[in-house]
Amino acid sequence: MSKSHLELTGVDMAFDTPSGAFLALDNVNLKISKGEFVSLIGHSGCGKSTVLNIVAGLLQATRGGCVLDGQEVNTPGPERAVVFQNHALMPWLTVYENVALAVNQVFKKSMGKREKRAWIEHNLALVNMQHALNKRPGEISGGMAQRVGIARALAMKPSVLLMDEPFGALDALTRAHLQDSLMAIQQELNSTVIMITHDVDEAVLLSDRIVMMTNGPAASVGEELAITLPRPRNRVTLADDPDYVHYRQAVLSFLYEKQTFPGRSEPEPAPLPAEPTVAGPSPETAEDSKASTSREAIA
Amino acid sequence: MTTATSSESLKAPPRWFAAATERLSPRALARGGRNLLLPLIGIGLFLLFWQLVAPQVNTSLGSFPAPTDVWQQAGQLWQEHSDERARADRFVTMQEERNARILADNPEADVRIRPYPGAPTFFDQIGTSLVTVLCGFLLATLIAVPLGIVVGLNRHFAAAVNPLIQVFKPVSPLAWLPLVTMVVSATYVSDDPMFEKAFLTSMITVTLCSLWPTLINTSVGVAAVNPDLLNVSKVLQLSFWTHTRKVVLPSSVPMIFTGLRVSLGIAWMVLIAAEMLAQNPGLGKFVWDEFQNGSSQSLSRIMVAVLAIGFIGFLLDRIMLLIQKKVAWNE
Image (cartoon, rainbow over all chains, first blue to last red; front, side, top):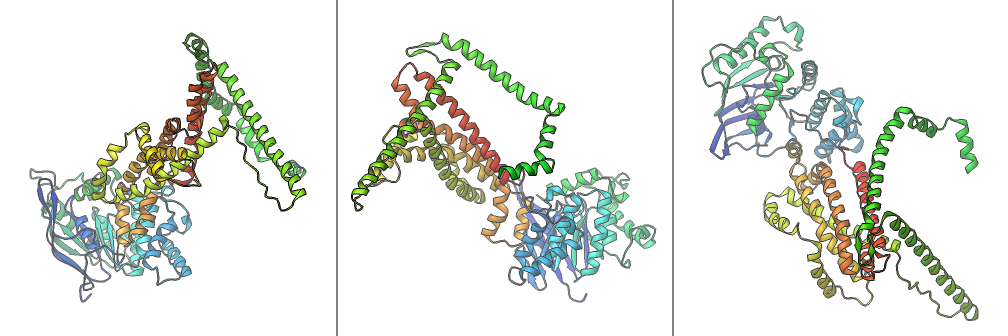
C-alpha cells in the first residue's frame, strides 16, 4: 500500500454538445493502491462512468490524466478489463467462446492450446458457470450472463478490474449472490477493483474505500470514506454491526444532505425516504430507471 | 438393403410412426386444416374468378387464357420437352454408332460428337434463367457485402458514397441494359468465348440492379453494432481484421441476410426483363418469343411462364430463408 498503483491527476472532461462544451468532470484526483477495492458512488449523471471510461482508456480526458504503474493510460487495453452493466457478451458466441475470444487475444503467444483451455475453464469455474460452457448468452439468465462477463474480465489477468454498475440490471437476490461471489473472488485474487454503483449497501459491503462524487455538471470527488470492516464480510451479521451502520449513514448523509438529488431545482432539505437505495436491495424497476438515466447522461 | 431396413423398423417402434400419429391427432389436424384450408379456398376462388372472367377479355390472339387452357399448355410444354430430349438422345446415339463403325474400320480416325443443335425447350430455359440469376446474384453479393462493410465502418467513406448509392439504386434494368450490352460487346472479345454475350449482359444487369439492398443493409448492420461490444473489442485491442471478422461481421449477419433476400427477389424480377432484351435463352426470351410468335396458344404459354416465374421466385426466397436460419445466430 506504499506507492499508488493507479493515479488520476487533475482530470477534466468536457464533451462537445450542440449548445457548446459541457464540462462533465472538473479536477478529479484519485489514488488507488494495489489490491484495493474502491467504489465510486454518486447521483445519476455525476460522471462516475466518465471517470471509469477514462481509466479504461475508452475516453480521453480533456485535461489531466491517468497513470497506471507509472505508465500513462491513453488507449484501452486488457490490463484494465471492463465489466459492463449489460454483460456485453457476443450473442452469437457460446459462454466458452466468449471467454476464449479474450484469452486467445490476450495470451495469443504466451499460452499453449491446452493451457488456454484450462485457463478459460478455470475462470468460468471461478464464477460457477462451468455447467453452461456451450450455452449462448440468450439461453442463460441475466445474472449468469453477468457472471460470464466477470469471468471474461478476470481471464485477461487485469491489473485493475473496472466494473460499471455490474449488478445494476439484476434483481435483488441475484445481486446479493453475485456480490458474495465477487467478494470471495477478490479475496482470493487480491485484485484491484474500481466499481461504480448506485447502491449504498453494495458499496459499504464490498469496498475498502468509497469515493463519493459531487453532482454534475463539473463533478468532482466530494468525500472519501475508508471502510475498515474486517474481511471476510458477512452481509447478515454486518446488518447489525454499529460500524457498518455508521459507514452507511455517512454515505447516505453525503448523498442526500450534502448533495441534493439532481433534477430537483428547488432545494429539498429532507432526505428522500422513498428513495430505493436507502432501503438497501431495492425494487428492480427503480434501480433500472436510474441506471438508464445515468447511461443517457454519459452517452 | 430394403429387407434390412424393413426388419429394423419391425423391431423398434419406428419414429416416423409416432410423428405421424402426432400429426394425425384431432388437434393437429384442426390446426393443419386451418393452415391448409384457407389458402386452398383463396386459390380456388381466384381460379374460379379467372375462369369466368378470362373468356370475356378478347384480344387479337383470341380470348385471354383461362386456367384450363394454361394447364393444357403446361402439359404441352412438358410434352415438347420430353420429345426434344428423346430426339437429342437419338441424335447422340446415332453419332456414337457411326463413330464406332468408323473406328472399327480405322482405329486412327479422328471422331467427334457434335452437340444436338435443337432449340432449347421451356424447361431448358428455366435452367438457363436460374444459372444466370444465381451468377448475377453471387457477383452482386461479392461486391455488396465487402463494400457495405467498408461503408458501415467508415463514416467519411459512407458520406462520400451515399449520394451515389441513392442515385443508382432506383435505376431500372431497362435503362442499364443498352449500356451494358455495348460495353460487353466492346470489351468481351474472344475467338472462343467461354460465355455467351447475352448471358453476360443479362447477368451484369442483374448484378447492377440487385446489389443495392445488400449494400445498404450490410452498411446499416455494420454501423449498428452494439457500442458495448465495440468497447469490448477495444479493451481486447483486437486488430482491424479480427475486429471485423469476429465482432462486426457476425453482429451484422441478420441484417446482411435481410438485404440478400430482398436482393435475390429483385434479381429474379430484373432477370426476366434483361433476358427479353438481351435475348439470353431463358424465361424472358421465352416470353418475348411467344409474344412475337402470336399463335393462338401464345397467351396461354406466356401465362405458364408467368406462373413458373412466380413459383420459382417464391422458392428462391424460401431457400434463402432456410440458409438464413442455418447461418444467423438470432434465428
